[in-house]
Image (cartoon, rainbow, N blue to C red; front, top):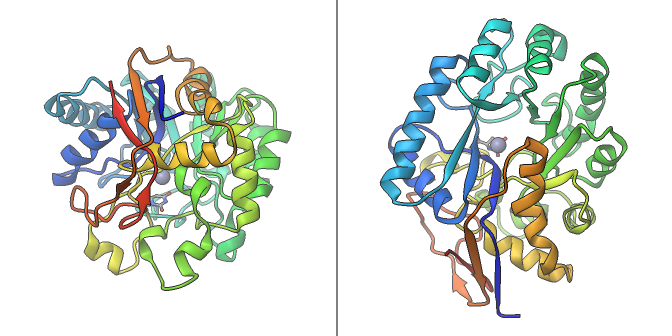
Length: 336
Ligand code: DOR
Ligand code: ZN
């Protein structure tokens, strides 16, 4: 099969940033995705209805300027003390999810959540309003390779305290987390990125240190990658796509910023990973159907064509070094 046409995909986890980068990053996502959920860890963070609404206007005008027809979904950031009214105003402003960043776990998360008890009123408000909780599942105090595993008991506590809360554990990186998601009730789902399906810690550290592949949670072993791929191709409604595309300018990457610019290559990487697993026919379910169903959204109407046409990923795209820069990928993507 040299051309694979699928329903226009969704990206349920993307960092579009703010300021001068936003226009290019939003346009790049709109080039490949019919819909994408923008993360709230901008500066200042999205913690109010008016903040969410203003950011939504900026993202939508960037999409309109790109000439693409894509829908932006928005999120807000949970911070201790924001209060139930702020949560409800974010929901009223159209936020599709509220994001839980453990304090200090990743980029712009110093003001995040030290302990789920510190946001229990806010989580209850989300539960009532039916707004899913999106979680960065890492305990920043644990050793770096064990951070995801160390956070799983915190998810257990959140689920026990909020029996109707719908939860998305973001960017799974370990076999252990895949098993945990399978064991939790159906109100829990998870996103998997194209980089965790394609690369391992050896791409970051194995030969020369390559910050392009440095992200949180850090890429793990080939055994973890195999478990993630197995989950992604399994057809289970619990696993769907979120790119965690997280561009940083080269100077920030050089000084150690975590985050990989995935949007320009995500669909190419996914096609290669699904092909490797002998499951190209399952790609559409993973990237165009299951996330929409979890979030209760209609499926996208447009189409995306994937073509077996090798291309070499440029060193710089939109001012950031993309994932897989300099590598030749076997699949190209274009929205019809
Ligand atoms: O590597 C990451 N970068 N992981 C995250 O969770 C956040 C992201 C960012 O915003 O740069
Ligand atoms: Zn992220």
